[in-house]
Image (cartoon, rainbow, N blue to C red; front, top):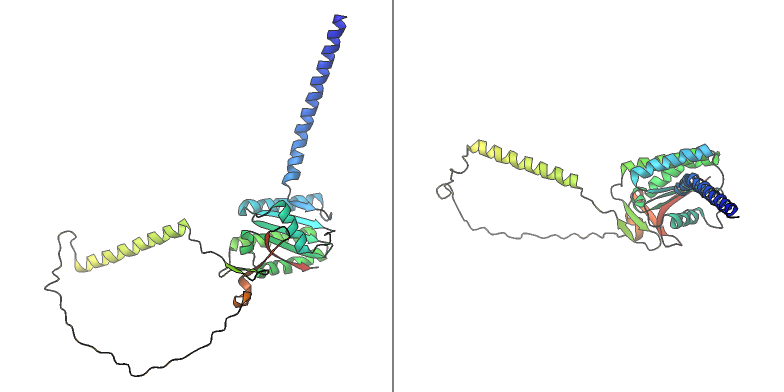
Length: 283
C-alpha cells in the first residue's frame, strides 16, 4: 500500500515537473513574437501591405527613428469611424505617443487621403510648404495602389528634410488662437568653441603686427605720452539751418499673414489635447 502510494506520488511529481517545463518553454518561445508585435510601428488595418512590405517599411522607420529620436508610425485604415484623416491620425498619435516628437504617416482608404500628423520638434522641421511637397510627390502612388512606395516616399522625403533642419525664419502659427511662436536660436558648444578660437587668433594677429611694427620690447618699454602728445581745444558751434520731417504709414497685418508661408508650420489642437501640425492630399 505504501509502495503504491509512493509510486503514485512520484508519478504526479514527475508529471507536474514536465508540465512546468512545457509551459516555461512555451512562454519563452512566444515572448519574442509578443515583443516584435509590441515594437511594431506599422499598423496595416486596411490590409494594404504584404508581410515583406511591412517588414521593409518597419526597417525604414526603425533606421529613421534611431537617427532622429522621433517616434514614427505608418498606419492604414479603411474605416475612419466618421473622422477626417487629420482627426484619425491625430487621435492615433495621442493614444500611442502623446507629446512625443515624431510623425504618423497615414493612408486613409475611407476618406481617400494620405496624411501626415506631426508633433514636437517635427512640427518645426516639417513646415506647411515641405509637407505639401511630400504629399504632392506621394499621393499618386496611393492612387495607383502602390501603397508601399507611397509610404517609402513619404518617409524618405521626411528624412531628407530632417537632415536639412529647421528653415530660416521658421515659426508656428496656431490656427485655433492665431498665436505665433518663432523657433528659438540655439548656440551650440561647438559654435562657441569656434568663436573663441577665431577671436583668439584675430587678437593674437593684431598684437603680433603692432609689436613687429613698433619693435616693442614687452616689460621694459615705456611710452612717454607727455612729450609725444598734443591737445588742442577749439570752440565749435552747430547751427540748425533747416528741418524736414517725413511720415510713413506702416501697415501691420494680423495673424499669420505678416510672415512668409514658406517657413510657416500651421498647428492645431486635437480632441485629445495634443498640439499637432500636418497636412494631406486626396487621391
